[in-house]
Image 1 (cartoon, rainbow, N blue to C red):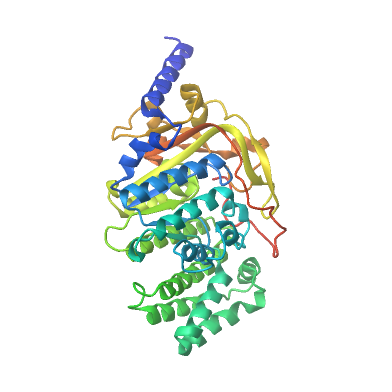
Image 2 (image 1 turned 60 degrees about the horizontal axis):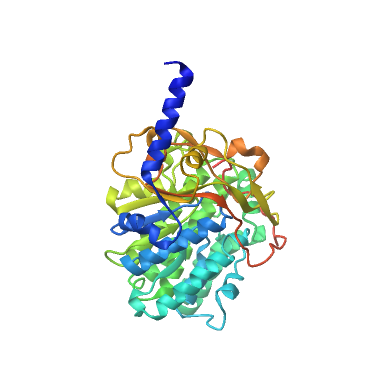
Length: 441
C-alpha cells in the first residue's frame, strides 16, 4: 500500500470512529446519554472552547438544568470571582437584591471581561435557577459560586466588613493586611512588581489573616453563610497574593496557583453542601480537560480537571469538553480592550475540529466509553482553544495538541457557532488591566 493510500485508509477509520461515538444534538432530550453518564458523579466539569460563544453557554446551561432537576446536583462553581458570584448566589436563593432581575445583578460585575458573565445566556440560566430555588426548601437550594483567584482587594473588603459585624476584636489582623496593600492603590500588578524590585511582600500578613479568620469562623461554616463567605474570601486573598507575586515574575507556575485554588474551592463547596453533594464546574476547556492529555503537562502545568481526577475515583468525576468548526465569537484584541464580534475561521486541516466536521457535518454529542484505544480518541490532534483575547490571523497558536479520549469523557460538537450576547458594551477599565494568565492555552 502506498503512503497516500495508507493515509486515506487511516483517515477513513478515524471518521468512522467519530461517527460511531456521535449522536445528533438538536434539543435537550438529545443529552440523555450524557446525562446518564453524569448522573452518579460527584463533580461534572463542563468546558467551553471559548469564553464568548452562545452555543457553549446555552448547552452547558441545558445540561446543568437537567442534572439539577433530575439528579440532585446542588451547586455550580464558575470561572468567576468569589465576591461577585456570592452576590449572585444570594440572589438566586432569594436572600438579597430581589428588587432586581438577573440582568441588574449581573451588571454589578466589575472585573474585565464583564461580558464573560454579564450576558444574556447567563442571565437566562440565573432566572431559571432562582425560580427553581423558590420551589425548594432552603437546605435543598442550588448555590452559584465563583472559583477564581483574582479578587484580592474585594475579598479583603468583605473580610473587614464581616469582622466589624461579628468579630471586631479580630479586626487588627485584617487592617494590618489592608495597610500592607494600601500603597499599591488597589492595583495587584503594582503590588506584584514591587515585590520583584524589593524582596518584601504582604504574604505573612494575609497568611496570618487567613489563620485568624479560620479560627473565628470555626464551627460556624455549616449554619452561617456569612461566616462561610468570610472564610472563602480569606482563602482567596491568600492565594491571590501568591498568584500575582508569582505571575509578575514571568513564572508560569502562576497557572498552577490559580488552578489549584479553583480545584480546592470546588472541594470546599462539595464538603459545604454535605455528604453526597454533587457539583457542576463551568470553566474553559483549558481548565476542564485533563492537562495530562495535552502539552500543558510537558510544561509542568496542572489544571482543575486533572486535579479532580487525581483526588477522586473515576466514576466520581466527568469531564465534558466542547468544540466548534467556524462561526463568530466575542473576544478582545488585547487584554482590557473593548469586546468585538470576531469571525472564527474554519478549523485547520488535520485538527480534531476538522475531523469532526468531515465526519459529522452537524451538531453532535459524543460520549466516550471505557475503550478509548481508537485512532481518534488515543491519537494526538490539535484542538482549538479561544480565550478572551483572540487573533484569528494567528490561528496556529490556538491549537493545543490533545489526546481527546484522555482529556475528556464526552464532547459536545457544533458546526457553526455564534457570538455570545453581552448585556452591555465593555467600558474602559478603571485601572490597568494586565494579562493574568499564560497565553496559548
